[in-house]
Image 1 (cartoon, helix red, strand yellow):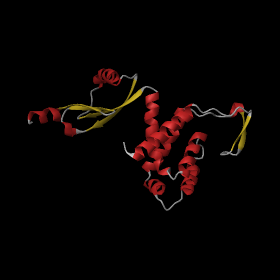
Image 2: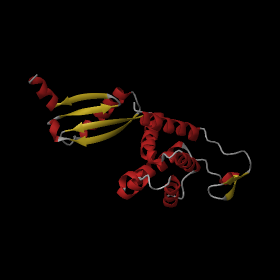
Image 3: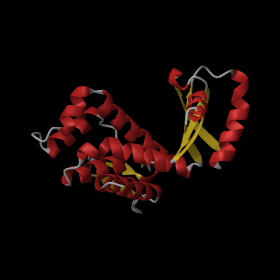
Image 4: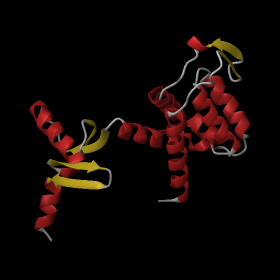
Length: 199
């Protein structure tokens, strides 16, 4: 694992743990520096891990889907404070933990890591929910009656109750399918069978 990947993993894991254990202060009224307002205890909002995950996904999508935003975030000629100011202007309703994360990344000149941290946080969140992410590559459209059997098989293979299936179409494999889960690859394609004949 590369050094930058370790940093991203550390940020995502520690952020997940902090959000999961986040508790507001005990006072009946808390001053929120970010929003600059006082809120009664019953109106205070404690974000959960899923809401924070959604916000990180939105931030990630905004950065990677917009060429201008992507170039801006990765451009070293702009200060990290300028980048943070723009992000907070575009997304003014972010929860306190996400704003805190953005401030920490700003202080460490690491705002460009947001997409990677968001992707890693999503993996941690899926694992926490017992959901496994599986990539399925097929040569042609799957017939509807294959669904229940395929799902049952994938649940057994991944040892999970829920499977998030990402289906990709690749006519190069000629027939059959390829399953990718974590670092495992199960190649049941016709292309593999044909290649074995010529070895």
